[in-house]
Length: 183
Length: 321
Image (cartoon, rainbow over all chains, first blue to last red; front, side):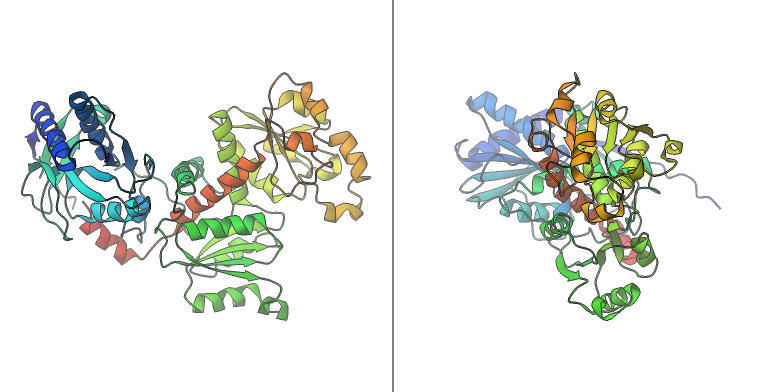
């Protein structure tokens, strides 16, 4: 017998204005953490982390008047669950601006959950040099970590259940800025 | 998430692949180009996988290209050549492969003089099998890297006019190219002496030119095939000099076309036979780009074929976001 279709319940966690305020605060916190922009490199994780890193970089550039190097990182090839049957994830672009040695790299991602993506990103960054420091900056920390990884800068923390999803939408890809929790 | 196509267990040829599967490989190859430009040219995607390169025929470029692709994905590789192994003692193909499987390998890359060898093997062992050239049948990764190179250069494949020049009859490269190009919507022609063109090739919707001048006038891309000199004594062509005079791709001939025709060659080249050195090294030659793309395409194929066990897939699904 066919099961009745599951009804999705969406709760908005951040609307466009709240997201904008969060990003501005995160930009300021990154500047404080990195003591300015001298060694700063922002690395966005594909896909929405790249857009968020770009937004934050622009905010920093506006307030500081200097360019902030930014890159993109696709961690697909460093995942620990590639050993699976079925369609492989599409691999996005990886673009690292120069050697990371002695830089302060800030990883930017949309959602921090199990920590496995960040684990893969740390492994991958190590193959591009030896940054003097790597920090983690996420728009949403939804808890339920499976690895000993914590964010340095968080836009919004929320307790979630395993069956729930956090849906981050950004203007550039989705036509609007919004973060929803879907149960 | 939208369902993307998968490749199945083996890559034996392009004949039975869908255009979507071919595009999946080309699209996946794109990000792999960047891996070869990194300071550390290695990603851990195939860590712990064991791959055997089983070569029953001479090969330099293809074998090295596969080996680089495997190593840049962190796989462990073993090369087995027909000479100096138990193959030369009369062991059958299946026995060789089963013995390798008994040592717990995951993938086999095979080159073999018999057409159909890769599929034959794929049907008999559990490991993934990748065809690196089987007799006169197919050489799918060569055609895929040719497709990627054409797409890089022209931004598309659909609607382009591609002519395969020379020894089409003996060429598995030509056969795989014909399948791949037609599936992706290119117009395909062949040009060469009639002794080196397969009978009835027009029935596949392929144009046939008997004069190289006509082919040059028509084409956007010339894929110049190697004249298989080892077959010369069989009387397919009068002489190498005669072949160059009539079918050689020379600057003088290319100059008559108003278009800048892209020049490709799968290698190894016979300079001054099927292709003039000034053309091979000329501004419109993408012959070395083909070699670079070969590694990326083979990485994509290895990555897409490397599967795991069903229970792991389920566990990963439960654990993923």
